[in-house]
Image 1 (cartoon, rainbow, N blue to C red):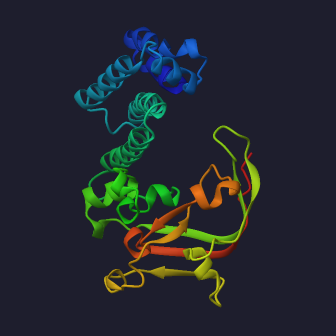
Image 2: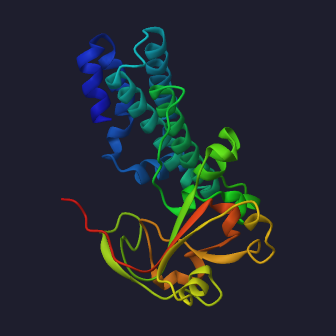
Length: 272
C-alpha cells in the first residue's frame, strides 16, 4: 500500500486523496490482516468494494493512457491488485480454507499472466514456489476437494506442452522455516521420510542426489501411476505434525515434468 500511495502522490496527485481514503479502510486494524478478517466475519465493515474500485481504476487508466509498458505504472497496478486480492484471501480464510487457498492461487497465476502480457507475446518465465503451489493439484486429492494451484491453472490455460513443472524433495536434513504462521524463522530438523513415501523409497537408492525426467511412457507406467505419500515442506513446517499435515498423496509423473531428489538437505541462509 505504501508503494502504491507514493506512486499516486507523484503521478496521480488529482486522485491521490481519494485512493488514500479507500485504502485507509485498513488503518483501524493497525495493518493486522487477521484482525481485519475476524472483524469482517463478525459483521464489521468490509474494505472489499473500495479496493476493487481502486484496482479497476488503475487498470483502466493504464490501458486508456497507453502506459502499460511503463514499468512504474505496471508496478502500481500490480500493487493495487495485491492489496485487493490479499483482502479477499484473509477475509475468506476465516470461514473457508479452500476458497481462500484458491483465491491466493488464482492471484499468483494472474500475476504471472500479467507479467507475460507486460513483456510481450514471446516472453517466458520461471516461477519459484513450493511443491504444493507448482505441482499440478489434479494429481493429488486436492483436486477432488476443488483446490487449484499454479500448476493446474497454468497447464489448463497454456497447455501442458507449454509448461514444465519441476518438483523437489528430500529425505532428511534441516530447513529454514517457521513452526506456525507469523512465527520467527528457525532451522528445523527434518525427520526421515515416513515408510512407503516417495522420500523413503528414493532414499534407499544408491544415488544420493538425482532427478527424473518424466515422459508419456512414465505416465502410463502402472507402478508410477499410484498415489504415494509425498513430502510437503513450505515456509511453515512443523515435524510434530509430520504424518498428518506434511504429506500429500501424489501421482508423481502426473504432478511434475521433472523431479529432483536430494537425500540430505541443508537450510538456506537468510539474506540480511
